[in-house]
Length: 300
Image (cartoon, rainbow, N blue to C red; front, side):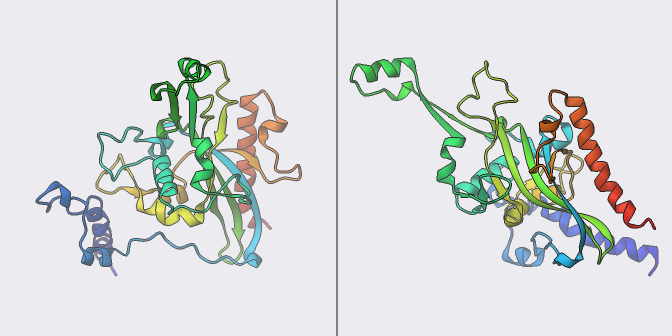
């Protein structure tokens, strides 16, 4: 097979992906037909997340579990944060938090837990106090003290939105597959982090102390949901990627803040306190240890 045939096969392979970005947009006679695929198109697409291969425990020669923080203030992580305002934008573009929250509300996302050890399960009704705060204004308390019914305008409701999410925390495992002879990474869980909804507008509270993990999602069970949600590709809007592809390909910047260790998986800030620079250096050291492990496997 010469190089011309290789290029031809590559072009044909990539052609359906470029056509699926905004399905039927050039052939639509009405705006309602944009993005609507025929049954034949759906059958040919075979659009599903790439299945994880089976990994036997005996094939794992070495592993390390790490927790990372994905700061949404960093430009490379913007695809997870935007869009925050969905009023003037199409329904096919949503932030990662909107995707998770929508599927949590409609019941499609059920494997949601309290912490990163996935021991205590939660449903959407259990998370109401975490996602929404209801307070009463001073005039409302005056009505209550006077024995009157409180007016609706004196009831203050504050609900978390995509704009309030400041970071994501992920849990994953690095492992050396001795059967394939390479170091691999498997994402296990992801959690949106935002200020406590009860103190989100309190300027007297330190923002670093008010951050809470809203919920932890068992990632393998959410892959189809994240595959159906597309991420805007600023280099080529005709070929968007999925959230599942973005996360599995590690197209983000994360900083390790915890690793599994003998001290009960303590965080980096627990043994390096009040020094952000040294905490970053420790995170880099842990990353280098993982990277060097693969090199050491081939050193005799």
